Image (tube, rainbow, N blue to C red; front, side, top):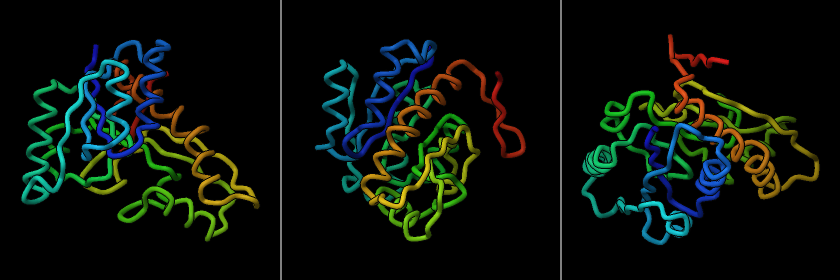
Length: 208
């Protein structure tokens, strides 16, 4: 059984999707053992407590710089014996100390089809605003491994949805979450915990 630690900063809808999937038996070889938040008032912590999952708070401003914060994060993850670390709306960029300590053991869900609309500054509603501004016809979400390059790690899974003429950023955001993010993230976690993902030459290969 793999220990899954989830990193959060906000409401925790992706965390809830993971919890629900685990309860349905869709992550048979993994268990969410801890939720670590960068904000003390994140509602995601309440979701964890309601499901009897251990919580921890590491507030960025409590540390002198990113290096100190990243070092504390590594120590926290190692203390939890994390096998898989999942970013679920975690809004703080960590340095290479963390990715070096957990190579290809950290994954993130991004609300666009990487390599489009990704990288520094592309998060939350900003992504969907740009999608609408550019007039693309299809968008979606990507689950990828976390590396030192923001949104640049090997892609694990992707799913797409149409962009409609009547969409607002908020409506599009909801569609991407419900039809892509909430389905992809548990599936990627299950594949990892089942040992079905390998990385070669910067690309993932998934056993059927």
